[in-house]
Image (tube, rainbow, N blue to C red):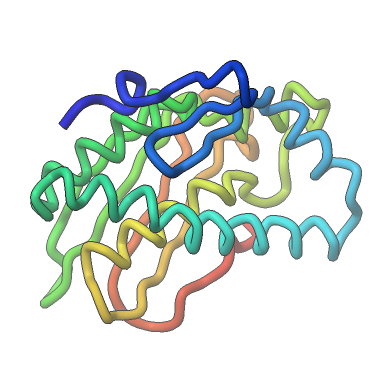
Length: 186
């Protein structure tokens, strides 16, 4: 499967960047996260939850295309997802899988998260809650493909935007079972 950066097409006449039928947007992360900073609670929490859910629903289409191109092999799907994340500027994603009882647990480290970096660049300082909601949503969509027909739980248990000093990777965990969870407060 070709890397996403090789499949992206810049269509200057339309002002669009596409991968087949899927359109992408290049945007500075401090602009996106700066909008979040301008909201107060509970609007900030609602926005994070809405973005995570939107990324889960809309991101599933991209991930399903990656799965089909990977022959529905889970290892190749994880590799394609990590590659696409890097190609889109979503940081360096490192997946590990572990067995926990009868079920898998999928761990994700996100190095150089644009959402955490954007939070800080926009003047957010040390966050009081995880801010990588788009990653949360994409991981939920990915887990849904890995464990079809089963509810999944996703938890960001360490966000670089909430660390002092900054720079540590964001840490996520996905597992089958229970209701899907929105991003939670630290």
